[in-house]
Length: 326
Image 1 (cartoon, one colour):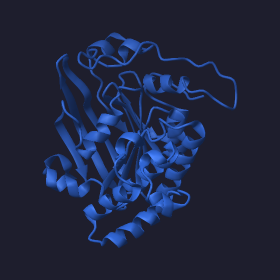
Image 2 (image 1 turned 30 degrees about the vertical axis):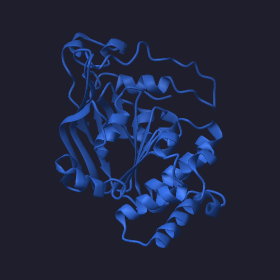
Image 3 (image 1 turned 60 degrees about the vertical axis):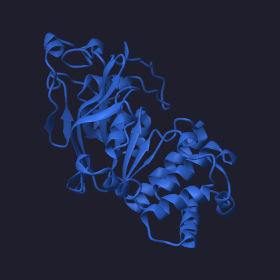
């Protein structure tokens, strides 16, 4: 494991709505190491995307980072001014969103959008920026890159648009790339191509990759370590290969039981209930209304995130439970 490049400490990001305060991220802590492919996994509403937006300091209103620390290379990003953050976004930490239709501007060509990012951080001429944009399109394996530079987003397929979004994120060779469910809106064949591309780029560029997903199969394929989020808090952190063999949190076990297998027949077991209302979350452990192992302590007391070796778990009963992978 390399040196720590990013550390999130007790991060709280709330949304102040008319209905009440939504505690979307409520005390999340984890570390990311240099060159590591890390997965952040959980159901819709678990806080994955809000965590990534908080790291980039681009939480939309009415959201606000309430407290915590986001330490990048020893400096707290939450103490940076907006001007200082502009020098970090896209240069040091970049993000690929799940929908390229909303992240690419339909009014500008691919070349314009790549050049804008390149020239915002590098002192280069327009021709040098164009050459770099061409290199990037070749890197993400877009066919006929010269012609694609002149294209508008609507003239490209969904898979090609996502490749352009990845190229733009990599334009300034960032230390960290956050991929927020980058294959959600693509068909299965294109999904596989995009995932292979990200794996190849991560390995080739020795880049720190944060893969955000709800898909445990994708976690197994692309990451070395995984953070499991539930209802805005961390349930478990572990090396990916270990979490599939011997998970420690009942929520992780429930996620894995809901994953289909292609090598043999398996009865899928959906998790009962749904993610709780984060305006008024359950007392104690937030998973307790859906947990088959709940006891009174789970209802009354919030479990601390306990660290042992390379693992961490927030469960009162993890030492007495035997939750094995399949």
